[in-house]
Image (cartoon, rainbow, N blue to C red):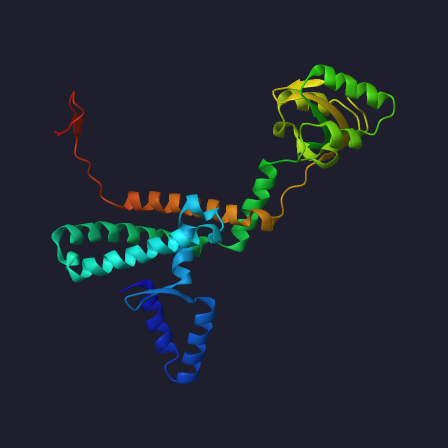
Length: 284
């Protein structure tokens, strides 16, 4: 019995008395929240199914659903078409299928067991304690803001410095001459030392607010003319911004501890083996 069926059965038992109106309303809500997006031989495919596949695949999770909706839906339709045909031909009754299902059942049991145990151990207090430790392990770093004008040659960079020394506006020259066209006024915002290439950071962090580099700074990107902005200490991220990562870390810690405890309780006997010169396993 699947998780959906079990959940549905429990709800039915709890709310058996107040009947039709609630059921009708629930179906109406589900139809809006989880609409049917296709049918295959009368079998419904809902939005939640395609969303689950999208979220479960790390390579796809970062891609907007609308960009891959068509191919995902076609794959889901193909899956339904083929699995229905397989059922009709009784593939589920073959020894090979039954063996694979047993192995898959083990994986599912292990996954759901560990997920449920880890979730029970996850509390707001534990996450907040992890957050405080995270802040201790990641003390504030020095940051600064700066703007730059990126030129292809040293000669061009020196010419820009000469213009600035004569009173030219830095932002205007940046918008007009910089190779880095994506930055308005050449503004780089705030950054820490490790976010920039070493040559740039070394020069920039040695400068005072408002100071413009007297000589071009060479990096692999070209020649930079830098205007230093204010320095500050970085602020730690808010709890809400790292809560998801903290939950994942706490779950990993729980799973690791649970696995160690289970291994201690289990009677495990490993058969001695060796590998021959061809890499073939040999049981002793």
